Structures are given as structure tokens and as C-alpha cells.
Length: 240
Ligand code: IPE
Ligand code: IPE
Ligand code: MG
Image (spheres, helix red, strand yellow):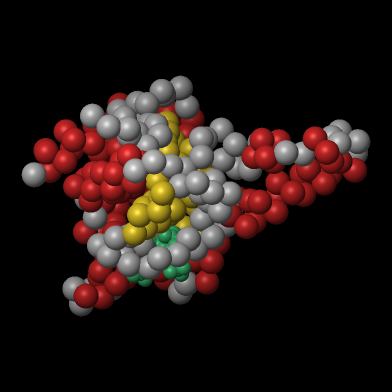
């Protein structure tokens, strides 16, 4: 079955940029009588599977919402566990990612992360910077509203300094000041775990994206789920 849907989608138009709101780790763990942190570590397994599958079917850009600015308000213990998980996962996975020609990027306020995370991310990005395969972007301490505000401020400064005319500020000039300036717009957004909202993720970049919501919690999501989302995307596309 998995093979069938996979074969079917690779004959069609694979979205160039897929973004995912990886939600439901906590609920998944709770349903199993476990703590939320266990859910997050299971979530990492899903990340591994989805990165591999995306890379294999030729997705160009995969952007994963790993930690929002709002997530800082969670209990300290959970925040610390998430940060630890980021470091330990990068340590273990980066060699394989590199071997698979994946190029790692980040968006968000990386300076707000613990020093250890910043270092690990820096090294991982450096190691993979010349790779030409999947562009994997982790959104960390990310807020799309902040990113848009920041772009507006940069352009306001440029205008005050006489470096740009207000009438020359168009969509493409604005887009160049976003943290996602080097990525194409998102074509498919997936959110797991049943919430139908965007939660301050890629507000500008999602303008024309197809939105796909599934009830599956992130730790239960897999390559098959990804293929299904792409199949759904391709069916909607064919309607136009
Ligand atoms: C998503 O799962 C992971 C992060 C936000 C880091 P949640 O932790 O939001 O899980 P739920 O939504 O509480 O089930
Ligand atoms: C969105 O999930 C953020 C990430 C997946 C990192 P949340 O669980 O934090 O979002 P809300 O609180 O349900 O909107
Ligand atoms: Mg959640």
C-alpha cells in the first residue's frame, strides 16, 4: 500500500517546499500514560523518518516548526528537555544528514537559545553548507509576526537613511528582508494532531499554500502520512 501511494505521488508534482507544524507530542504521551518529554523524544523519531522520506522523493525545502517564541512559556523542565533533545539529536544525526546531502538552515531567534544549542547548530550548519540536496530548516524560537515586524523595521531604517524609496517597496523587496528570503514560498503546510490553526508560523510564506490537517499526533505520523498529504495536495492541484 505504502509503495503504491509513493509510486503514485512521485509521478506527479512534488511540492517544492513543505512546512510542518509538528504538534501533539504531549497529547500522544498523555494517552500512553507517559510524560510530555517522552512524547518529544518519540517526536524526534518522526522527524528522522520525515526528513529521510522527503529527501528521497525530491522535496526541495522542508521547514519544521520545532519551537515557537510562545513555547518559552512552557514549564522550565519541558523547555530544558527540548533544548537537550535538540543538541543530542544534532550530535547523532548530523553525520547521516551530511551523507544524505541535506543542507541545514535555521530561522528564528537563535541567540535566545542556550549556548550549547547555538554551538551545535552553528557546527551542523557549517558542516552541511555546501550540500545540494534537501534544504532542511528548523524554526526555533520562531515567531512569524516578529519576522515580519523585523522586515518592516529594516525597510523603515533604509527609507529614513535614504537607501530606498517608499514606492520601491514591493512584495519582492519586502520578502528579501524576511528570514526565509532564500526559500521559495511554501506549497504545502501540514499540521498534525487535529488543531486547525497556524500558530504564528510562516504567515507571509503560506499565502498560497495548500493546508493539510491530520488528527494523527506527531509521534504517530510517518512517511505514509506524508505521502497521503502530498497525494491530497496533488489532487487539489489537479482541480485547477
Ligand atoms: C509539539 O507538541 C512540539 C512542540 C511544540 C515543541 P506539543 O508539545 O505542542 O504537544 P501537545 O500539543 O501539547 O499535544
Ligand atoms: C506550534 O505548536 C509550535 C510548534 C509546533 C513548535 P503549539 O502546540 O505550541 O501551538 P498552540 O499552542 O497549540 O497554538
Ligand atoms: Mg501543541
